[in-house]
Image (cartoon, rainbow, N blue to C red; front, side, top):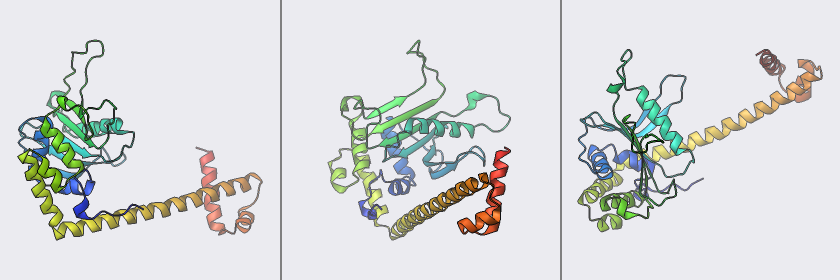
Length: 282
């Protein structure tokens, strides 16, 4: 089990601190302004840990930071410490679910869809070209200069880039600060905006209320993990029992005989036998 870091040891790439810091609209604005080289005016306070799904039967996603500016552009920003080897397709899923919620029922003018920017910030080079930023938009393969202009942009940021000439110095400072959110890194930054962000981050780290919230969050994750292990063990035992009963059924043993052989309550054996029989008729 991983050793729990103290709140003061967390960096902005750590999910808890990232979510807490991005509850502050000023931090979200600073981050978007630097990443996109623009002046972002947020329409509403950003939402962190925003849950999205298209229906109760479909997969739910949880967005780290969800924000809308005064031009109705939607921003979804994720801090991703681990390479799960599915991030391009995960960003596609995020794009699809966000899009599915944008038009009210009955609206057929798809030009009303908001522009959506999805940004993933990572301490590794997902694509291996040494860039700090990889920006993706749809375009025609046959005519590369022909863009689709569907309003969808996905940006993958790499804190370990090797080509500073392709991005602003302030973005490089921001990425380094997000990976190592320390006094030393902040002081080395020429960007006053990053230094001001660090001041706000230090306030979060010094808050007793946030410390309690962090401890509760950690304890909840441990409980969920333990419950998952227990559930997995139980499911494994059930699958093994079902397999054994199915083999006994194939040899024409009765429920009572199987119950005695496996030392399992006869009612449980009967229920599993019914389940096996029903599956055969599906």
